[in-house]
Image (cartoon, rainbow, N blue to C red; front, top):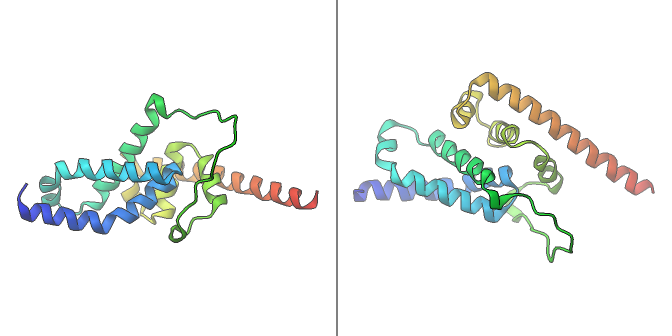
Amino acid sequence: MRSGDDASFREFARDKALPLRRTAYLLCGDWHLAEDLVQSALMKLYRVWPKVRRKGPVDNYTRQILMRCWLDERRRPWRSRENRDGVVPEEPVAPADAGISDSLLRALAEVPPKQRAAVVLRYCADLPVAEVAVALRCSEGTVRSQAARGLDVLRAALQRQHDEAVSGRSA
């Protein structure tokens, strides 16, 4: 890669790493995995940087790579959910600058992956439906329906958390 391309990639990666990390965290709920996903996405982007950069805006393509990395990671057999029978030594803590509540993260974890991706990109990353469709490689109608279903699941999860908190206080 030419030095000009290399420098432009470094600048892009420096500017976009934190927003990508936050998006990845909202998808997976784990800061360490989010960092791994962003790293993988940036490595894949680096391989095709000169070609992609010449075609125009790179943000959508980068989000698309990030989504593919996350979906691929979920398919790996060693990433299946663990049954934890013992006490976890410490709870993961979100950085103070994340601005994400614990209740939202717990509720997002209950949303199925494709619906979660649509909700996160549409409402947390504040992307228009067309850009979300490009990132998820689906139609705009699919984005709307997945986002609507995801919001329904999210609302139900948040309501359940609220009801549990209220009943816990009154007991």
